[in-house]
Length: 319
Image 1: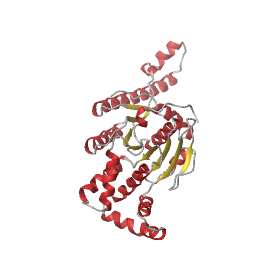
Image 2: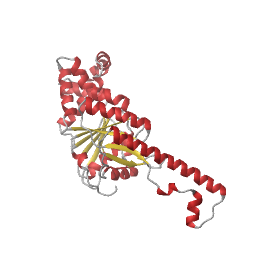
Image 3: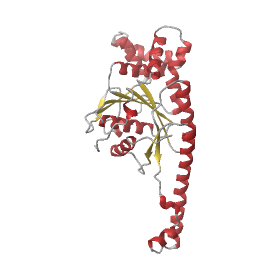
């Protein structure tokens, strides 16, 4: 299960952590690693996938996620990681149950009404899911609820749904739900967002825009920025293959030198590009950052999460 790690201050700051980033930057992986890190410190963690992605269960060594909770990991620190999905359909059924509707009516209404309601009330599906997260928090369903949010293109509408409906619905149960969800999201003692990016131009562009949307516009608290997939610095890339061979007193065939020089240029270009993106992030988003290593594997396995959890536990880089 890996070593016991100290839980960073930022991870224990709120009861709800919403993990957000552009598709493909590793938000689900970071959410899973954060869950392990918090549980390793003794927390009871509920990991929630809101867009039906079942793969988090397998990544944590369990079964694919579904609407029923399952225990995924029990690290040495005494905590545990549980997981489940929350879809709009599930959230709508749970909402009807909360309002006292019976099982038969609830199943019929869930099937027949959600599409109609969602079609006539933009943002309602997102609000239902966030309403379920809000109820889980209200019930103290876990010490920490980690929400694996939709990708960046859908994240802002997802997190903006409550304030959007507040602006369009004057009263009634939808307005009440929007008010309560908005109160959760904007309470910096209860909820924070963990933004994830890669050190590449397009993901950095999107995370800069997303951070300003969430912080400046919506007033949400931001945890340290997670830069995933970072290349390790290699001082040796400053040397040519011929110079390195001379230093080591070995002789390399010409073809080998050319191949090594090509690899050196590639690696140097990657690191130069990474430094450029770090500089852009430092200028546009003056917030602490945590750098996670690039793992050169074809497929992530449960044991790889321990390396990422250890990296998450390191002190954030100053802006």
